[in-house]
Amino acid sequence: MQCPGAQYLMFITGYSVAAGATARLLFGYDSFGNVCGQKNSPVEGAPLSGQDMTLKKHVFFMNSCHLEVKDVRLSSTILCVASCPGEQLDTLEEVQLFADNNGSFLCVYSLNSVNYTQNPNADSLCPRLPVPPSKSFPLFNRCVPQTPECYSLFASVLINDVDILHQILSGIMSGRDTILGLCIFALALSLAMMVTFRFITTLLVHIFIALIIVGLLFVCGVLWWLYYDYTHDLSIELDTERENMKCLLGFALVSTVITVVLLGLIFVHRKRIKLTVELFQVINKAISNSPFLLFQPLWTFAILISFWVFWVAVLLSLGTAGAARVIEGGQVEYQPLVGIRYMWWYHLIGLIWTSEFILACQLMTVAGALVTCYFNRNKNDPPDHPILWSLSILFRYHQGTAIKGSFLITVTRIPRTILMYICSILEGKQRGPWSRCVCRRCFCCSWCLDKCLRQFNQNAYTTTAINGTDFCTSAQGALQLLSKKSSHLTSVQCFGDFIIFLGKVLVVCFTVFGGLMAFNYNRALQVWVIPLLLVAFFAYFVAQSFLSVFETVLDALFLCFAVDLETNDGSSEKPYFMDQEFLSFVKRINRVNAVRAQGAEHTSRNEEGAELQPVM
Image (tube, rainbow, N blue to C red; front, side):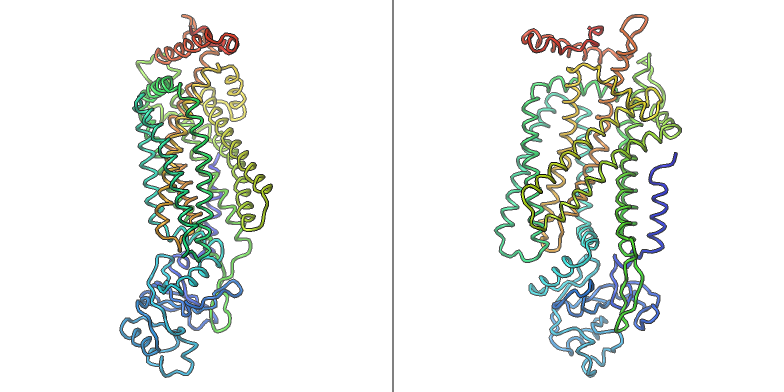
C-alpha cells in the first residue's frame, strides 16, 4: 500500500509548479509584472514588462504615504529600485540627484532621469512629494517608510487590508529568523527532556516537577503582565497590534487554565512519585536492550522537517498561482485561479495526514522492536537488530495499519480546524457568551477525542506487532486485553504517561513563551497568531517525536504484560516472558495495594486485579 501523501504530493506539487510563481512572493514585483531582482519575460500588451531587474532588488511604492486599496489591489504604482531612499526627498531635483548618484530610479521606467524636472507629466509619473525616508525591511524586500505617520498608514494598509494568505505568509517571512531560533530551542528542550527521562532518579523527578510548577506560574504571570502592558500602551494604532493584544489575552487565559489543572493533578498524584521512578527504571531497562530506540526520533524529526520545508515551499507556490491580466495604463495584475482556495484546504489536509503517518510509522517501529525483545526467552541474549527487523515488517506488511490510524487522527483534526476557523471569523463579530461557550466546549470535546484516538491507535499498533493482525482486529483485541488489566497497575501507567505529558507541556509552554518575548520587541509588523501557532505546532511535534519513545515503550510494555498474563501462568510449563525487574515491580505494586486495602478494606476489597494473583 502506498503512503497516504504520495498521490497528494505528486498532484499538489505538479499543480503548484505549473501554476505558481514563488519568486513573485519572495522577491516582490512591480505594477508591470516584473519580478524584482530577476530577468523577466514580457507580458503581451504591457510595454514596460519583460525588463532585466537583476540589479533592482527592492520594491518601492510611489505613494507610500497615501496607500489605498481599490478593488482588492493597491492604488499606488509599484516599482523595482536598486535602493530605498534613506533620506527625505522634497523636490524633483532631489529625486533626480538621488537617481544619478545611486542608480535608483523612483519614477516610472518610461521616464528618463534627465527629464524628471522637465516632463510636464512628472507629477503623475514620479512619487508624490515629499518622498519619505525608507529602508528595506525583510517583508518581501519592500521599502518601508520610516516617518511615523507614513509608517502607520503603510503598515495598516499593507498588512491589514491584503489577502488573508499574504497576511499569513508575511507573518511567517518577517519573523523567519525568530521562528528558526524558537524551533532550535524546542529541539534542545526536547533533547533535554529525553536525557532526563533516560537517567531519571527520585531527585530528578522532584526537580522536574518543581521546574514545571515554577515555569507554569512564571509564564502565566508574564503573559498577564504583557497583556497589561499592551492595554496601557497609548501608542497602539495598527489593527495588527490590536490583534496581537487579543492573541496575548487568549494565551494568558489558556495558560491560566492549564496551570490550574496541572497543579491540581500534580498535587493529587504527588504520592506516586517513588513508584513512577521505579516504572521509568523498568522502561529504561527495556530500552537498554535496544539502545538505538533513542535515536529513532532523530530520523523521524529529519523526515518531518524535510516534509514541512517541502510543504511550505508548495504553499508559497500556491499563494502566487494566478494568470497575468493587463489593465489600464499598461499595468499587470495577477488574477487568482478558480478554486485555488479549496486547494489550500486540500494542502492542509495533506499536511496533517502525512505528518501523522510519519509519527505512526515511528510508533509502530518502536513497538515492534520492544515486542521482539520482550517475547525473547533468553534475556541475556537479546535479538540482533530489532529496529531494522521492525522496520522491514512495517513496510512489508503493516503500512495499511499506519495509514488507517493516521487517517482516524486526521478525520478528528479536520472538524477541529474548521471549528477554529469559524470561531476566529465570529471573533470579529458581536457574539454572546452562549456562542463562545459552544465553541470552547466543542473544541474541548474534539481535543479529548483526539487524545483517546491516539491511545487507541497506540494499542492497536502494539497488538499488530504482537499478533501480525490488521488494524481493526488488533484494536478489538487490545480493548479486550486492557479491560482485564488491574486498575492499580493502570493508575501507575497513567501517572507515568502524565509525567511524560508534563515534559511535552514544558517544551511547548517555554517555546511559545520565548516566541511571545521575541515578537514583543517588534509589535507593529508582526501578526503574532500565525507565527506563534506555527512555532507551537512545531514544538508539539518535536516533543511528541522525542518523548513518544518513552510513552510508546511504557504503553507497549504494559500491553505485552497483559498478553503475557493472558497466555502464561508463571509455572515451569508456562513461565512469564517478563524479566525479574519487571516482575519485582509488579509485586511491589501488589504489596502497596495490599497495605492500602488493609487500611481501607471496605472501599478497596473489589479493586485488586485478579489476574495479578499468580504473580504474587
